[in-house]
Image (cartoon, rainbow, N blue to C red; front, side):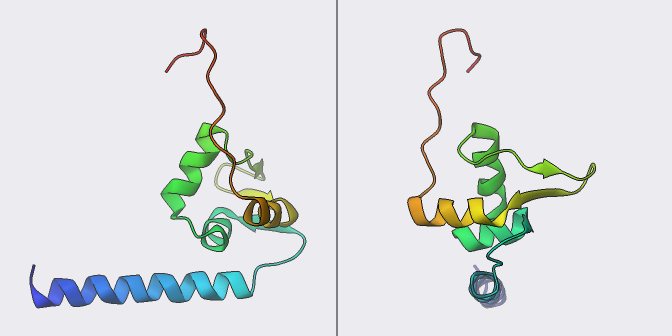
Length: 96
């Protein structure tokens, strides 16, 4: 890897950590929050957050339109306190 690539990767990681810290400090106690806020507060990547929603480990969002999905801030706080549950077991009739 080149020095420039390593520096860029380190900068991106530092920016992500900074964003996550700010998101956690400013996370609302009540109201609705978007996926990127929730993922940062839970310490997850955005893709992982959406994967957990798809797997049923995190509740499905409230949809306010095609591109607007929100979760209840109290629910996200509970997830952080209690941990994200494991994926539900699939029954014999469900596709893999």
